Image (tube, rainbow, N blue to C red; front, side, top):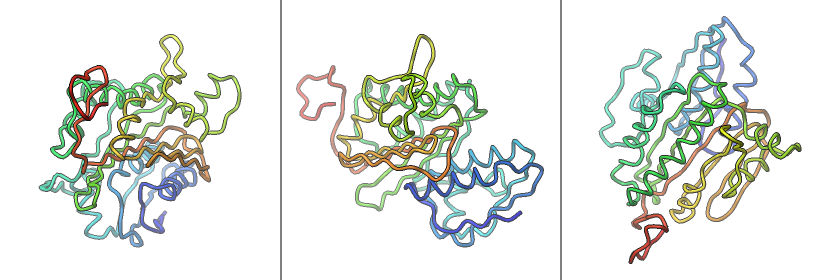
Length: 293
């Protein structure tokens, strides 16, 4: 079976909706050779390898054989730099310009590996906004909460992550994406509130500082409070997809939309503005700094 990818794929509502639609259209297949044809794709944001890899994992878990064909040179190059194409017989290319975060699949019990990845691939980027050591640890802890939730729910074999840096754009954005196939946020929040709530409203609820579905030792909150505050000051962006809900925070504005199909898991994409010359720290570290966080 050959599947034609109809157009370019970006970290926007349309891109997520397209990829999630793939999943729901073909997730029933088993024992099939599935060929993804990229002839019509001229641009692909490489951080979305995390989401595409999640779909490929699901298809392969049902005995399907997945392959890719007809990628243009630019897409093939970036996906060889981040190692996404290595399992498909492509050699890895050195990332001389430091524009990618390596595509990785982490088993839910690989705490040290995931934390090491975050420090090396994300916070250690030379262009990453200057920040205190304590704030760096809090950012790592926030992102690790996504990983922790996936492990606690116990419904995914891997957590997928990837990223891409665009140094030539004015704000020098760094997109960082984490995807898991655990329980979705709508399920968690609806169960916690004991009433049905739309997926996009559930995501918005989970983004409010102090709101969490944690009870006892059960994990379920997004855990993104510190990153959310950081992104406000950094003029970055947060996007979250879970169930059929899409949530985006950018420039002080929230956009909520409904996907055309359901993703049983959570996609978190964070865009950091690396053209930010401020130095950030936690408010508890306040001394005589002008820029505080």
